[in-house]
Length: 208
Image: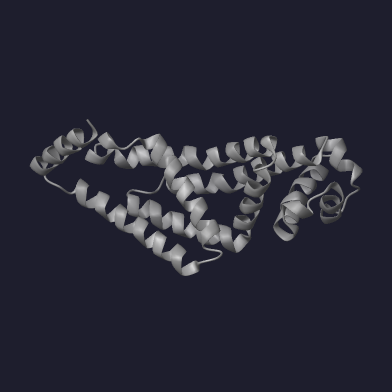
């Protein structure tokens, strides 16, 4: 039973990757999984519920090793480098295509939107914890909303993953711009105590 359930989840992801959200049905998923389509309804009740479970299960499997790698990161530049590598790995595996299809389906299906949001939270939670650790003690941390920053970074990479499909050079330029911001944050951290106090004061005045 567990094997059939997993085959259906894998079949849903493969079908999304190969046919897009418009090509997903109990019949196409079951054909990809190599099982009777009645088993879609036996195990999940409906195709949308299967897609929700597939979204969360597939994301959990990808996020787990990524979180372990994030724990080894010691700077924002290293975090960005890791993001670049994961981005390349996700695109090569076809997962960017799957994400695009989940996002497309979520526009018209509130239940799928909820599942997609929950899946993205798995990435965002890890980013938030890493950013909190990396920015601890930095003057930037006093200005930055780390929770919001984590969401902004996640949104930026999602947008870049989709944008790169139509403008690879533009996507690369955007990643390079993010890297320059990471370098700027490192420069701020290297300031001496007097300069850091002056920067903190200026930031407080700017946000007052």
